[in-house]
Image (cartoon, rainbow, N blue to C red; front, top):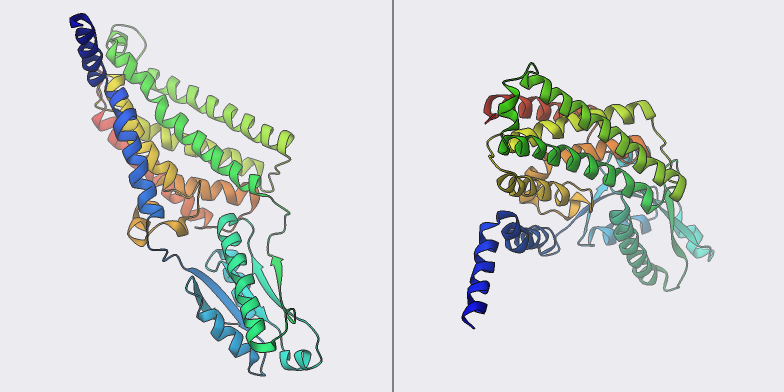
Length: 360
């Protein structure tokens, strides 16, 4: 029994000395719980900006608009159809409802009236929620106004030029995640060399330290491009996922983003003496970026106080840029904004990494 207790105590001592094991056992689940609690634990106060183009002058159009304004999850904006469709394409609106003219005449004649809803299928989760709520709402309005089951009908109109599926929007997110992970975790190689005194030994060789870093960067760039090719090839040949934008622009974004996350990774581990100490730092940076960037679920789910964090995370802009290029999705930001923010992260991370990096 004494031997058993001794072994048990030794196991616990070894466990508590292993920072990585401690992180994944305790901090990792807690971090997940906090993130998902903040995102999904609100009071259901998510609101979607919906445009309404009312072309009816009989008064029924006003009744429909008024009923839509009573839906708690909708923020209704009145306006002209062309202007609102432009805002939908720019991402300012999540859907546009067109109320046709002369509804009263059609209802009097017993003819069904089609109420069109324009939406962007690239906003997969938002579109499903909005269309579901609209179908239910129009059904209730129909009963109130016509007392008949099918005279007011909701007709869905996609504003996307491409017939895309859920997988088509997931692939850019997977690619963004892969670029981020490769860049951040690639920095652990230099930490391992620092821990084993390899970097210090390079000082006694003709090879300069800067040459070591450059070789690592080029090595990671080649891996990133190869990784992107594999992901896109599997998506294209196995799941028929198209790339509707410029392949050259896609390659440029992949390379530019890889440099950004390599620099961020070097900054994260610039003072770490061991891989064991660097790993939790990388993990703490990685997981908020994964779950607060809109890669896995829409940013509308985020509470307002978290929006500044979302807008500061570089993966938010990388995922948005990749989706614009690969599937022509409605932008969260302009492509110029995405590139500028990634460039700012690249420059700031690189300068700080150069200043803070330890060679021994």
